[in-house]
View 1: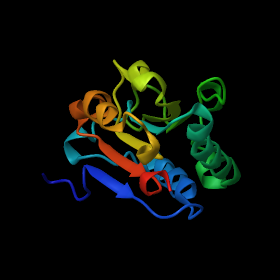
View 2 (view 1 turned 180 degrees about the horizontal axis):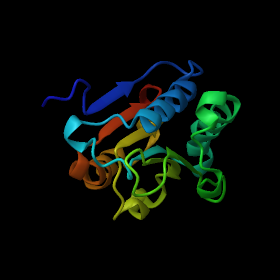
View 3 (view 1 turned 135 degrees about the vertical axis):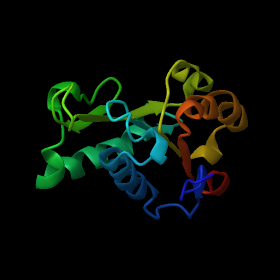
View 4 (view 1 turned 180 degrees about the vertical axis):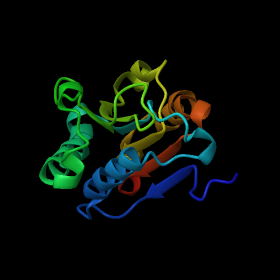
Length: 169
């Protein structure tokens, strides 16, 4: 693998150590710079990063933090496409530049979703980056990991980050 980063990474500190902040900054960076393997760099119009957690409220925490950071940054704010972004019912932040068809066109989306119902509603989606928040608390985590998440990233060799307190403690 020529990728300078691991395909699956784990951040597992204790409770209240800033995992949500790290996830928000990382999702924003990944979406802004479209971090991916070099062979996928021509696919500029489709980049999806998702923050996944047990509930939509938990998943929304990192998304809201990212949105607030982005809106308060003069540099980041100019890339936000407000008419394509929404907070409810399923948070979606769209960033990009250029007009479709132009050489400098690119688009990225950052989603927040819950892993409810074994994350089956993610079927038929594809992701470049997944941040799975509180993965250790997921009762059917291995099934979701093997049957759902890895299959959503395989076509573009996406990356999975798991940010969780160890066994939910």
